[in-house]
Length: 66
Image (cartoon, rainbow, N blue to C red; front, side, top):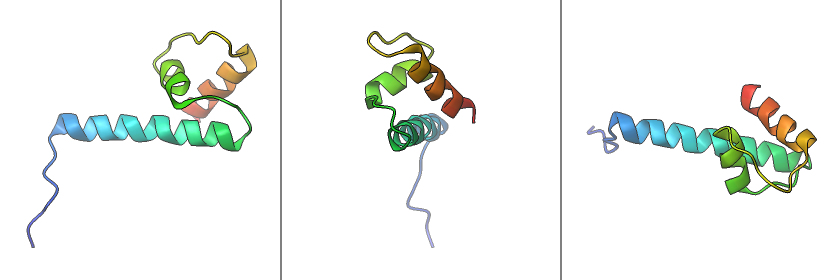
């Protein structure tokens, strides 16, 4: 049987990073932290989001390192 998924190393890394942020975003919303996907991406990358409390940012960072 032929492998139909021929992804490069860069494509695999992109998919893995995309999934990590997606899991953090879904977990944050499940815990009641109202945050958008793009805000989660910025926090994951180490940026600052205006309008979010410090507690929410810390909670998302804790999910990142969990």
